[in-house]
Image: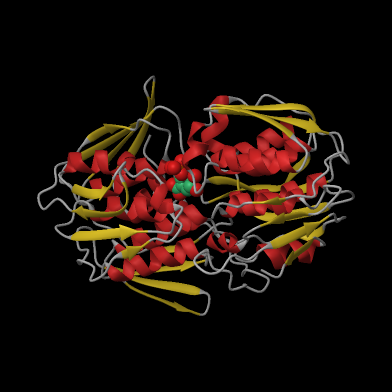
Length: 472
Ligand code: S3P
């Protein structure tokens, strides 16, 4: 199948971000936060731009000669760190009004950075950038915060070695790590050993500066933003669905054309106000303009399977993809379910908040096939299991599965302080939990929320939540 080369580029989500952006930092002092029982939540939740598409807009813009313009960019710390990194590799990036202007250096044109590249908390940032520079004749050293420096990088450096890039990191393939890019790269054919859009994307970005055909095969479909956006910038890229999985073929050394990109709103951020509305009495919240790309929308299907009052309004096509306004209403009769393992990749970032909803459902919610959760910003099964147990909810877990024993609406005790482990989605999930538990829930550090959803606190409070910072 030839991808529609205009797909992502013609998204039109022109509305500005609302709410005040708080200067929470994932690198600064911890910001303890508390959330109390509230309700009803009412109104419209204008969530920020999609994190995955924002990173890719900056990286692909930096690899394109000419001016790429981006509106709706997520201005979270993760994406800002990627913008800084692209400047260090030679791109000129500035913001005027609501538009980001990127003057790129072209495929293969990255300059050698003068300093260490600090990707902060962002696995997506560091892995995609490593891929993009691995076939340039330059050397770069990468680091991150305490969370990122624990995460596995061999999943990316193994395929990059096939192009001819060398990497020197800490034991277990951890950051800080230096990559020596291949001066004379060869294209590769690679099957991803784990379901990971970051790995797939790193290989495709490396393949851009390798002459000839780079082929990536993935057994399970992961988010396909890279494929769509590469096609949009002018790469020849084709995805075939075969018995072995999705086979993506990219022709190296494309002529990229600068793009005008309107970043759609992030379904992974939409998940928080949606789930908050489902568990708080009397709520009725609309989250407008959310893309329902099937590689991202697994949570919403799962919530509907659980009996959530979640409807899609104004269903339409935006840039060749389904999109809708999500309307979530209080759902007192949620049922625990078996979440299909083959849905995991399409909702991988949403399991923490799903486990919160599961606590208010009747019966067990079993979530198999989720080993990848153990190597995210935190071990998300462990982090959520600890906090849910502290809040009075039974959780069983294995290496690649977990089960939440729901207590039903009104029956979740709460009253605990949870660790967020430098993980934005863990912090937000526990603050949403506290909106419907009998006693308030606290997190030790809400600072990481700024990586993906800097307006979380004012947005949720604007709907009627009671989320506050506490004295450290
Ligand atoms: C992302 C891919 C996913 C996801 C992350 C964003 C991306 O990671 O968890 O938040 O933008 O490619 P994996 O590729 O590790 O599954």
